[in-house]
Image 1 (tube, protein in one colour):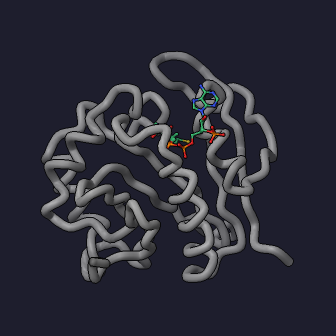
Image 2: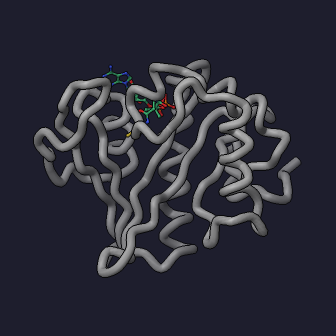
Length: 181
Ligand SMILES: CC(C)(COP(=O)(O)OP(=O)(O)OC[C@H]1O[C@@H](n2cnc3c(N)ncnc32)[C@H](O)[C@@H]1OP(=O)(O)O)[C@@H](O)C(=O)NCCC(=O)NCCS
């Protein structure tokens, strides 16, 4: 049965708004060094139930603080298995959003994120006044680069020494998709 707060239904998983009941599975799946190593430092590690509840309070179902709602959970068999969202840009860059995403390790390698990004890219372009979605990938994160390429994102460049993670300065790969002219 499709839940009321479903954004897109991908058959064996859905993308939907977060609800408080997601806190346990969200924190269990997000609490992973190998996930954190590929994300911004503001993604907590260790990731506790308290972090999950704060996140749900911030971006959960309509009526909470995020407006427009752009952050969602990837629901696999009722579990909060991962997350996908857009960081909306401001000022003259407000026609763009930075895509962020992660998936619990147990669910890797099943094509879930490829279908999630493909579906949500279309959804964002259809539902938000934006012309560009981009992602910044740490240069060692080959699976993420591969997923973006499979979803039609173009490698626009290598941002040299643009980030620091775990004390190491690294290059970032800039991938983007824009709406057709
Ligand atoms: C990146 C991530 C989201 C991928 O999710 P996923 O559902 O496993 O991805 P998919 O199964 O859709 O596709 C993975 C692709 O990467 C490929 N891949 C896996 N390991 C790889 C490696 N070491 N080198 C190159 N490609 C690799 C897979 O073969 C597959 O491509 P294919 O379909 O051509 O075979 C997941 O690994 C993750 O959450 N990582 C940690 C957080 C993260 O990196 N977020 C993105 C930050 S930019």
